[in-house]
Length: 495
Image (tube, rainbow, N blue to C red; front, side, top):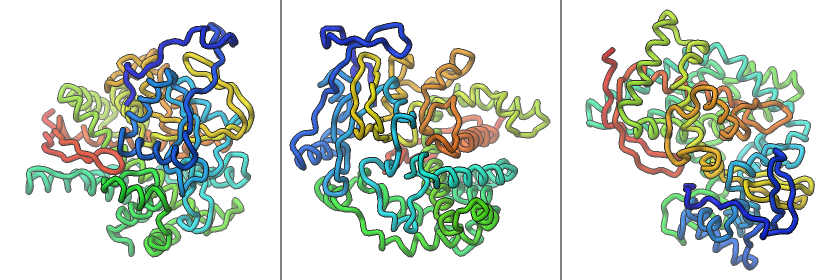
């Protein structure tokens, strides 16, 4: 993770005789050549891959390059490299100033870049290029994003009651396991609650009452693994793992039956949304594959990673924060006649700030990519860099959102960071949704269609937690994606 040691001192004019005004026009910045190198063909990418996954680890990999080149904009290779990605060369953006170029669709394109320097086989998505892989300039992008907006709007009245119902079941499960075993893993109950909630809220269909039963989360996990394996580490011995999942793509036929089970659930459950898709000129099949991806990969995947992270950061913050959240949440609900609503949650500034801070300090999707579609100038805090058309950008979001030039105590979880007028001004530097928190998804941009929905359910999770409990204790482990949380105690409400 980024640290103050890794920050770059302002670069003086001795670096370059050419000076350009900054975006604000207040200071002149030197024009620099982007430092770094790609190494020898084939050997360089593999060396970087081994350093990234094993020899250094992700954060140290980038930190060491920042220190070596004294720059937060560098040239490097990104995994997976040979033989999955034909071109692993990127310009890495490792600060909060350069990072937003990734969102400017007038200067960059996002075609086939959702997973980075490689694209999983479309055999994993029914033969279709899914919305996440489309650039806004492609006509289908507009139709499919409009379909997701329709899904979100048509299901809005079910979100609050279904979330409360599904997460009431989760907390009952956790409490029962605590009583029986003295501790409870959060992972499986959270995944089941999340998938049940999405089926019930989006489509009015409870997955456990269908042919899927309780298999949904495990089917999704296997399907996602086949797409993301080239950029994951599973904890296997280094060279075995590197050969198995980083060198050649896993064959898609191994998950064909699992995917078909998921597809059938969506095809049978999403009738009214598929009807709307046909009115928009999208086939039912293409729409169904996109609904599956948006629900299972994007939203469920986000809840699977982010809800444990919320627990981790709030749990680590301790009982004083827990009591403050419980007091705020319960008093607002009481003053609103015992009802929870969007308006009521807007009256919970600490709760809102805590959720934003969790998004800032550990964004659920750390990597974002884009390709320059014109020659352009890229600005960091210290310098301006010339970028040629066709060059690939890679942004490592945890360094951008923990940029110590932008955020004080950048490495710390500060619950009240986004409270008040000055705190809210910092939201423009929170990028978890593939765009600034202060902006909104449209058909013209690549910001997450469900941005507002994800913020809402993350807030609901914190509210439902502290409606029930004064404080809790956890044990934190690691998993392939996110944190592995074991709940050690839950202290029920005393006021």
